[in-house]
Length: 300
Image (tube, rainbow, N blue to C red; front, side, top):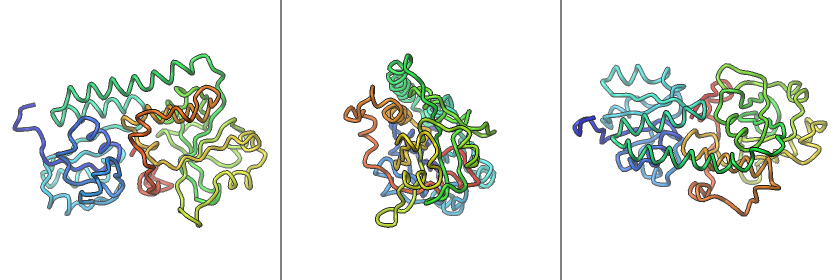
């Protein structure tokens, strides 16, 4: 890539993309982000250009970017419209764990930050290996990971399935991820199917209202499916940090968080990793839009 082609005005339409751009040291070139980008904190000072599948194309064009970066699941909604305006678009994958590293490399190449991307990839792989090495010989509880449902109920349940990076991270964390197969790595699951699976551990990532209107996720599961082993044994674990849904360099700390949930006897909560501290405080936006709502689940 010649110096003339290195983009200087970048717009990110995905939280995971913004995190990667920051991780490779190119965030100073970002001129706007999606409505759901919250990390790094400096995103709070940037213009917002819309949601996951409905960005404001006119606003994007008015900012005169020389590169817009989107994920594969967003591309059908926005790529042609942007390219028709002569705007260069980079599409990166974000479904599997391998996709995380492909995206890092692609963004590094596109921004002239190849060496920095290589270092970020190495650091992320090392963080994952540090967890994997400690879980290899442990028993593997069966883990169901819920990524979406109607807050306050167990209606419209969606689970991480084979082919998602969350499925891969549960394995690294010493669990046996369970869910019916789905074509895109995330799929709807009935309450009857949950009962049939009867997982040892449930990770519930649903984001709802805050404050006095907030639900008690454990109470929701206890009220509707008290017969589940995970419910009976107190192994329903809500996660309020929406960043665990982002396929970026933070997959290492997400694996560590999963390991603390699945194997608390090995991973003490007091040992919070540097990566977890780096992404604190918890970001409290809803999953609606990040996952395209209940019927548009995909990479973020």
